[in-house]
Amino acid sequence: MQSPESAGFAAGPMTVPGDLSHMVRTSEVPRVLVVDDEPLIRWSLAETLADQGYVVEEAGDGRSALRALSETSAGFDVVVLDLRLPDSNDLRLLSSIRGLRPALPVILMTAYGTPDVIQRAIDMGAFRVVHKPFEVHDLAALVAQAHTSR
Image (cartoon, rainbow, N blue to C red; front, side, top):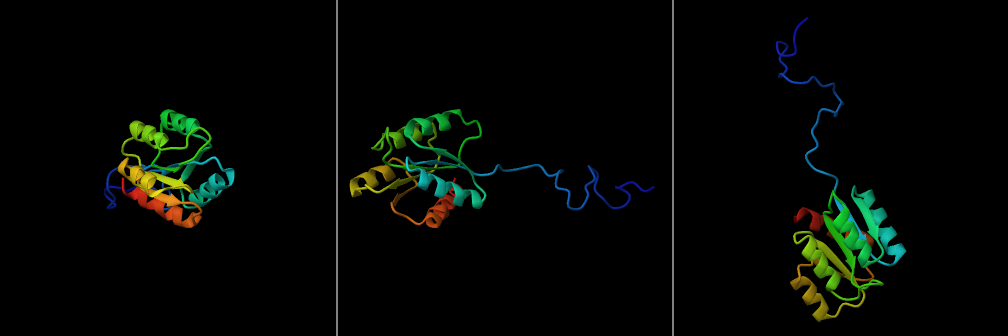
C-alpha cells in the first residue's frame, strides 16, 4: 500500500473530506456583555446578537456587569451598556469598565443623553453613544463594527 506522502499528500495527519476536527481554532466566538435593567431590551439584544453568532452574557445592573468583566476568564469583545441602571446613573460605571479593560469597546445606550454627557462618554473612550429607542438590528451592526475595530 502506498503511503500518503508517496501518493502526493503532505506529511501530517490524514483528514477525511468534511472532517474539520484537524483544524486548529484560531479565533474564539465573539462575546458580548449586554448591560441593561430592562429585561425586554436585554432579551431582544441577546437574541439578535446570538442569531448573528455572538455569545451573549446579560447583566441587569452595574455590580453584575463589573463582576462579569472581572470573573469571566474568556473575556468580552464588546460591552453594550445602558447609562441608567438601578445602581448607576452616571458615567462612573463606564469609567470603571475602562479601568478594568481599557481597550474593550463599549457602546453606551441612553434615553437621557445630553450633549455634555455624550461628549464626556466619547472622551472617556466609549465606542459610540446610541439613543433609546433604537432599532435592534442597527445596534447589532454597531456591535459588529466595534468588534472588528479591536
